[in-house]
Image (cartoon, rainbow, N blue to C red; front, side, top):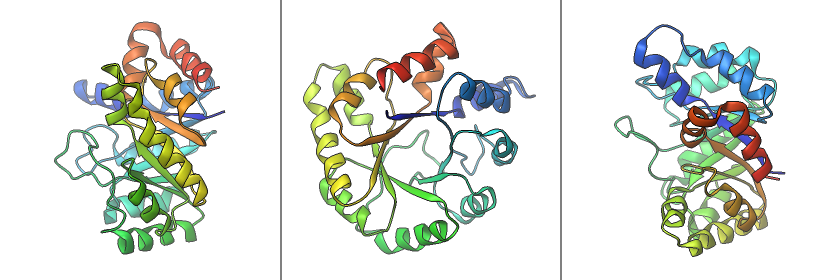
Length: 237
């Protein structure tokens, strides 16, 4: 079964809009795990516009499943990850001014940089994953960085699938196959939702984990976290 890691950034966004501590991201993480999710993902950005660095510290003691910290490996982020020592770190090349992640790593141009960063995390027994576009040469480049896994950037699939183009899943299936052949695990995330997750799961082999935040939290506004998480778990079987 593909594991579901729930990104709770949007819960922090809602909290920050009003100030204070409602909704409480720590309580949300506890509930999400109780409801069956197999992991919690956070993506602290330098401006802390949603998840704050202190949130990551506060969450450390309540994660009983898997803790995945995403982010651009600037020094502050690297120091945080080495302090927390989560189960997994996912490296994302987002700049400070982007609204949300919008591209994967060029694993050829940044190969030596990624190799150095990944080596440091692996020395600290932290599983590594890097955010990549579904391009075979990029997957081959990822293998040379020493990463344990890749995370396939799925926005292009989600956009095309919503238009009825089911063929958009093919590059993802090919890249997952290539990653497996090269000894890497396969994660996926970005714009996956209840509308497309079952199809993606059925057509992309060797899928270890999906990280879903915006869609899942939005769907939970209508149906509740418990119900929505159960629907994802069923789709991922």
